[in-house]
Image (cartoon, rainbow, N blue to C red):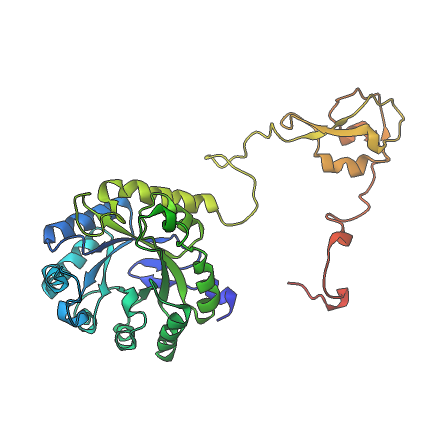
Length: 382
């Protein structure tokens, strides 16, 4: 896909557009931090909406669908996930409640059964966990849901991601956001060294030509790394949330719902500060340019008698620039002009003080400063 076409491409999720040039889609990752209590789900959805998040995601899966045994841990994972599962009726209630608050609640698909369940639910998008990024069976089913998808990359190689992308390509599926995930770590010695945020640039380069977009899941304990993520302009950022620090699930990598509002506000400030890359003069809130006191104007560097032909040493530039005078670059029109009257040192110079005003000897900027790799005969305009 040509770059221009990709840059202006968006993904529609409900009433929200996701893509380059759009506000970052902020997801509050509930995951399983609700601990199987529906009242916690409702509370976290409400907190995410009130904080200004765009979406929230929550795990959906059957313990028997993504565990083949308990492994070597004494903890019963199957029992935990069984307690954190909800019926289709409950999911519908959660999604509709989020809709009523202007929030998009979507599932993280943990197994193929979850994909099939989503066919009967009013979902608007879905997330694919890292451990399914190399699962062709789930990927092939997920694309048939016909909704935008996000996909994590924890411990997934670029080769494996490329193979996953091939699955989407073969299916003609385009509405994918590849999410770089920082490590679920609280160790300061490794937290920042392994964050590797510039991988997002790699994903844009490698997968952008397919039309796929790039986002980030900020999984660390850092209280500021998410703002560095925002500065790299992903189309989506996801961050774990929790109701209190007493929550035993993903506690270290989550932000408390009480602090979520400030986090969202600061991310939006980062977006605002980045601007559009267009060079412009600052304007006040009322749309007016501030008084240009710090600008300099062209002034007489020394006393100039009437009849003197102006030389380079007759000019200098000084503040303030908000009273009168001309821009210092205008000296080119006065170089060689004749003073019509005595001009004292430090007088702001203006054209009315001179005769024989000179035309500029070149266009601005001078053409000779351009370095081009072709002949002028081959230039046909942009």
